[in-house]
Length: 93
Image (spheres, one colour):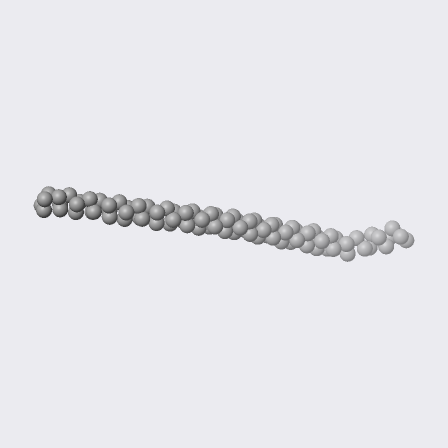
């Protein structure tokens, strides 16, 4: 009797097994999408890190440009003063 009952229930278990397999496939697909999302978070973090490095380099270059500008201004001022002194020496003495 036990074997006969089991044979009657086998057709009921077949759709159950198919639905379990389908749910497992859907779940695994969902897990792979979540992993892809985690990778995008890592990429965003990497881009943020690169942006911070670029901002630091921009600040350093801006400071170097200011120093270079001050040096040029001093050089032009000294050069102009010497040029005026030469003209004064040539034309007035």
